[in-house]
Image (tube, rainbow, N blue to C red; front, side):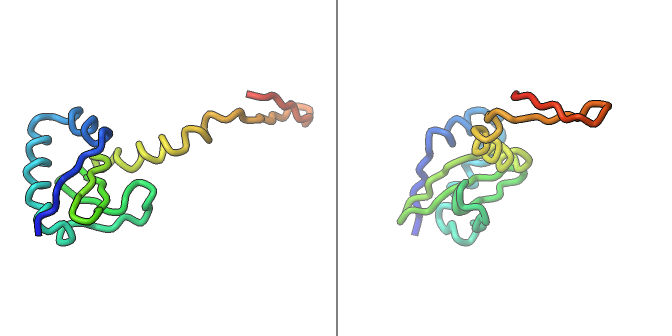
Length: 114
C-alpha cells in the first residue's frame, strides 16, 4: 500500500534551502520509500524530534507515520539535523541568566549575575 507524503512548513523550508540536485534526489527517493516505508525507515531513539528517519545519502528525513500518511517533519544534512533540533530545544535553557563565581588571587569568591 502506498502512503501519502505530507510536509510540515518546517520541512518545506528545509527543502527549499537545499541544492537542486539534492532536492531532486530526496523527492525521487521519498516517492520510492512511500510504497513501503517500514522497509527503509529506522526508528529514532529520541522521539521528541520524530519517530522515524529515512537515510538518503548524507541527508536525513525525519518523519512520523499517521495511518497512511508519512508526515515529513524535518530534512537536513546528517551532521546538522539532530544538532539543530537540540540547540533549538534547549535555547530557552541557554538564554537563562547565569550566576558566575570567580575567585580572586587572595582566594575570595566574587560573584556577578550575567
